[in-house]
Amino acid sequence: MIESLKPISRLSLSDEIVEQIIDLISRGILRPGERMPSEKQLCQQFGVGRTSVREALRSLSVMGILEPHAGEGTYVSGDSSRYLEKTLHWSLLLDRKMVDDLIETRLTLESETAFLAAQRAGQEDLQEIAAAIEGMELSANQPDSYLGFDLRFHVAIARASQNSILFQLLGMIRGYLQTWIKETLSAPPAHDSELRANKSIAEHRIVQAAVTSGNAERARQAMKEHILSSSADLRAHLANQGTRS
Picture 1 (cartoon, rainbow, N blue to C red):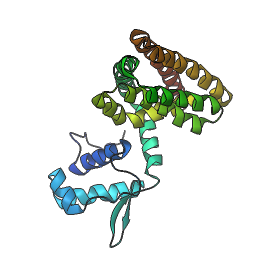
Picture 2 (cartoon, one colour):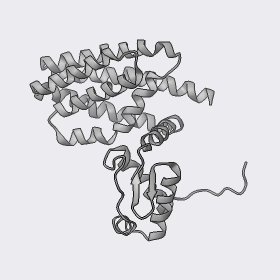
Picture 3 (tube, rainbow, N blue to C red):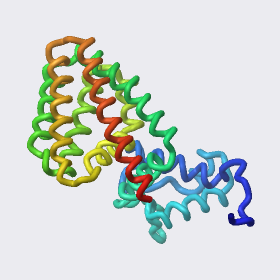
Picture 4 (cartoon, rainbow, N blue to C red):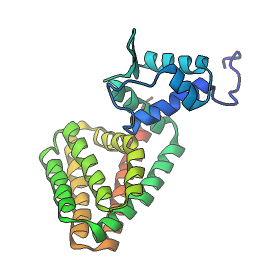
């Protein structure tokens, strides 16, 4: 035991600022290469002093999330997504309650978007959903490409729900969704990655068929079954990593 460590009662102001900025980047509100507001503007928006803002910006720069440019300001790093991916990975690995929360959120949110998509999807929506699945099939043995098409499918379903709030809510957990898909694909043994992708494609096909036919209840149930199946793979992968760490 390290006797000099003391219990933490709350996050410092600078830590809270760091968390908020990371959240904005993970949700795509702040994008790679985008210039950050000035220190003065950040102080006003966060309602804190300049010292807290400077500490937060310094921490984010050390992490590689922000890049300060002398005389030009501070910018979101082009490599910030790599750090965020690692952050989300460790969050899921170390905080099992977060895994439970994420599964519950996806079940609630995406089952409903699938239900509404079956009722409201237009021709363009159906074409986008089909294109996403076609991309998944063509890249089943290419995890990085597959990841993008899998994510595209879920975004297309949410958009087809014609509910802007649900669509925005999916955007809020997009970073976690991306990490979820990548974790399940990368689970050992590596040669099973394509098998897992093909299993997932079959599940996505069932959702697509229900949405296309307008069977809202079937779409909801199919999405629920897919998420539960995928969550079992995620839990197994994280448990395996936990025993090896």
